[in-house]
Length: 207
Image 1 (cartoon, rainbow, N blue to C red):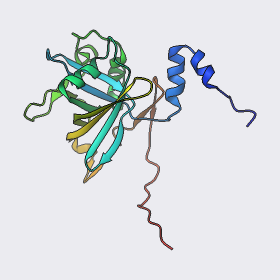
Image 2: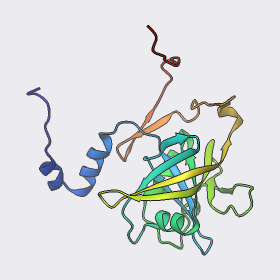
Image 3: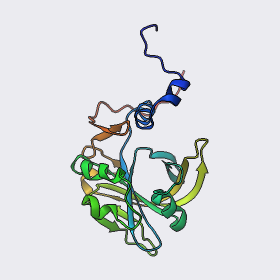
Image 4: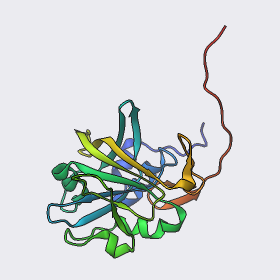
């Protein structure tokens, strides 16, 4: 244990913002990069990249994302709170660079779709306005269920899954294949390729 690199909470507090974010974000391991689509009351589309998507339950189907504390550029948070709609579009290797550019702080009147070269698509349902990413193979629409403020003032945005759209190339009955979405992110800047290792069965205790 003596050769481990040891970091205390006080060390983290003294680090500069970006290196600290990269380090702490990396501690949770590999995650899926996704794009969050929303729209404001003026009809301007917004697109932000996050790596905090989490499955919260299947019955009912719930998903959650964590957003930073609301500030001047908290367009995603404000839009979701206002319209109570948002989309999740998974990022694949062909759109990594465009997706990553969505992390920049664009003015509210600017659509990230136009700036980075991605195409908005609107799900065909009454009163649905939040855009998803047309180039994505796996996308879903969520209706805001609850906002939970975390101790660090970030917000857990919990959404009910309203609809799912899957490219036929990633469907296998009720299973979503990630062969075409074989990337993940570590920290905030580093993207990796994934590969299937094995499939194990459902476990039951018997004696």
